[in-house]
Length: 303
Image (cartoon, rainbow, N blue to C red):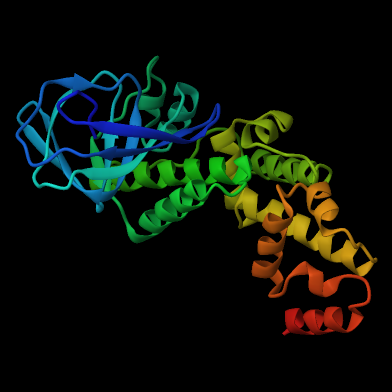
């Protein structure tokens, strides 16, 4: 990834919030030697989807391709070369210092305690789960379909945490457990989160909103909730909404668009897709007068 005039690069914003900024980039550079020295103003994480490039950091040469995650610490100098024609394309993730500090807390608390949190490594492996999570996230963002900020933020933070954890493991750094609070306090935080979700089903929640409501930080909350509840925050909220929809359909709800918006879904199609994935049929099958279809659905779900 590079931006000097020598290497024509186009950046396209895919998502931007106080928690994470995500950009697609396309570099059309051909095979070439190392260009001029450059640097990044922000700490970023880069995942490639096509091609490769090489970073020259001092005497080191680091190859970035679809099997690697490239980390760009803020202010670090490097030069870029391209080993082949065809350029490269990927995704740039940027996190504000407060979020980066939380992410690094699990890698090395000493790093997180610095005034300016810095990454301790420049690359790491892109395992299969990370590879597919990245591609699915980008595909959905590029589709133009309405997406819940809540889902995008939880997915982006989890992706970064997994990438940092894998890089730390490769480099032999023990990954410590979160040190803040006790198990009981973490369990209480999980229960407070459940209570808030149950009473705000129709709200257009963001991860930042939820964390503030339960007096936590976004990454800390997302990690602890999954650990104690056994499922991700987004999955938990989605199932709450879908089961509430099932109840309302049984009671005779007819207007699916109104039902979708009332339960916090971004659109009728968003609601229908989620409902079909969860229950195996569209909600239109269960409108008033479809009692037989509802009985069949219950029977299937009990199997």
